Image 1 (cartoon, rainbow, N blue to C red):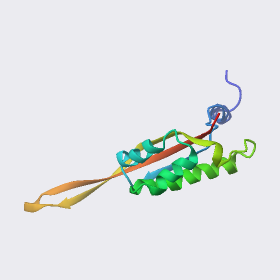
Image 2: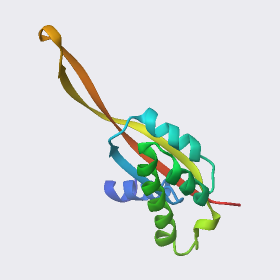
Image 3: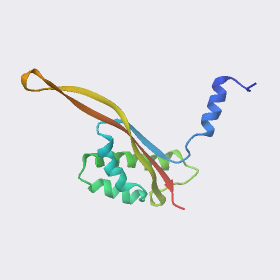
Length: 133
């Protein structure tokens, strides 16, 4: 038989599987996964400072959103892990990905009483940082 209450067992299991690297997640970003992916591909594996510079000067709309998310991940690293002493100089983008979110479906009126569907896509963007070895 299991030891402890069901919620206690779940809590212990989740604690052991918890991600220990600093990260930030943006849910329901109003852009498609493909458009976010172009910018994420450009910063994957780069140092945090270099990734911030890339997103700052990239002309795409997704880069401004990802820049803000990246700054949030760096702030999380510095503030939420005081025992590790993370600083922006020794952080790099270990993982970054965009997952598909819900799609808002809208109707565009067309000629002869027809209607075309417009799909306004959303995505969930995640950035995980790690320390350089």
